Length: 447
Ligand code: GLN
Image (cartoon, rainbow, N blue to C red; front, top):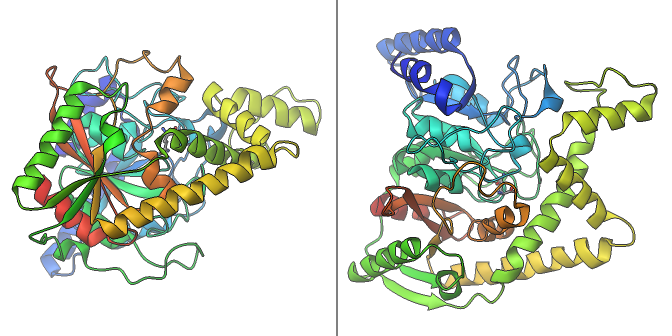
């Protein structure tokens, strides 16, 4: 009732939830009460959770904040969501995001932007913007989002909460709407690292419905949050010298590194010569994958269908022209271009090779160091309308989050103070693949 009240009061302005399920949530809460009394309640008993509008939940609307999925309802439940339900979580509603998770401000949503509670004229970040605001504004305890190139970490940084993306393949993607399949991971937005650990523990693990999900055993992350006394921490010097990095974020990052040093950790500058290539590589590969993934939305099988088609081809064209927003269309065009016969080798194949180089170098650094530490974002939350007209500026702002995505390694954004205007700053920590327990333990110690 507390969260439902907050939603009633705040959501009309903040636009974090697209849909709320009060009756179902109450019924789930009652069922959990009974289980608690009987001593049979699951690990998430009583946790009130919101779902980004990219996660399938049987018989519930699923739209990826796009017009093209108008009226579509899920035919099945995502494995990760099912695992939440099996542990007695209470699901409270569906959350606003950038259209098909393409964006960094929530402004590409068909339903309009979600707004940052700290200053509603500012963006909450994206693409999991609604999910971040929902936690920030106490409309739910935790949100489940998705992160392809920073979509849980960047909005967490803009909203002053914890955003966690696990190793690629740690959580099954079955029932997650595909944007770029070799990058997409389900992640969490929470107030505490403990909650992130508990949710990961519940959602992670092998899944018969996703052959790419890792077969590795799932540690009891929530029970292993004791940090080691000394870590080896690297930071990429070029990141802090980047033009466009807000000086207050630079100072906050340097302060954090200094503090780690004074706590007895080894803190060293490392070389990573590929910073200029990570954003182009990310956008070539993700748009290529997106152009293929989104070809299924053709007006025949899902949601919206253009009413004035005259034959099959015009049905496809009209449906996709009216159903997809401008950012999604731009990415489908770009992706189709880089995959076209005459450009495939020049762009797609080359980007694959650069990705391998970035991944190998990042993996090697994460063998030499327990963690890499860097800012989550170059700026704090910007004003609605400020950046979204400049597509390239928007893409370049992903500079610090996409490295972990290209490498497939886990990464977390934790709050690291605020700027002089009171806007939150995020600190990002990366660890080697499948070292989530170590990463979460350190993140907990930092928060
Ligand atoms: N801003 C990045 C993009 O637009 C990341 C989005 C995401 O992680 N889903 O692709």
